[in-house]
Length: 256
Image (cartoon, rainbow, N blue to C red; front, side):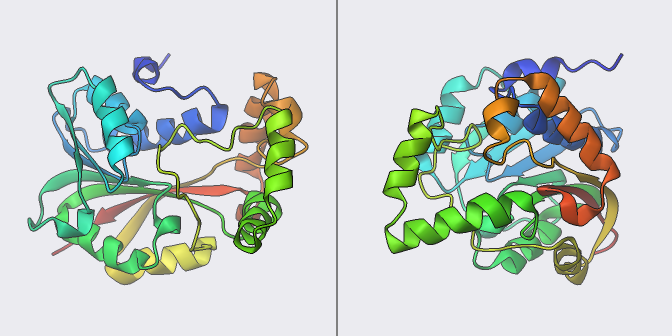
């Protein structure tokens, strides 16, 4: 059985979060380089960086949110992991990292192409870029994220937020401490592939995320019953891509 001790160094417990982490770890292990230099862009509270650091990789986690970096740094016990407040577009080096992780970040950017170009520049040829994003036309974005952001924009979201708090939803994510997690990009799988292929990346792998387990009212049951989460995350792998709530992808840089 595969050793997944890296999970101990995260605060993740939901099956989809763990499935996404497994995809990221598997993608980087594919390099067969136990001392790979990894850049985790938009590292948030450090869950992915610390998991990768526990395996032995040399990890640099960067984020523009000070609160998230403070949280990540307070949890860090690894000499091979560091965190800093930094915009990844400001990196001046070329071919500097064996792997780059950008998990649940690009949907928050007004200029995702600009960051994708920066990632291509700082990734070594033959390196791996792991990018995960929500499906902008999937169940969660259409039924939850877009309606909630519309209500918030109009100032009509307070009663619904209060109702969700009564049901035990705190509107927080383990991924980041940033208070502004607005989605401004809604990627289809085709559009996302065109974005990264346009920069010069070649796709290595792809996996669906989950289906209905984080959508109200299904989430009332799945958040309490892990088996339902496991079933949901397993079933979605056999469904067409437009049914998934998110995309896990890995890419390689094939030239300079």
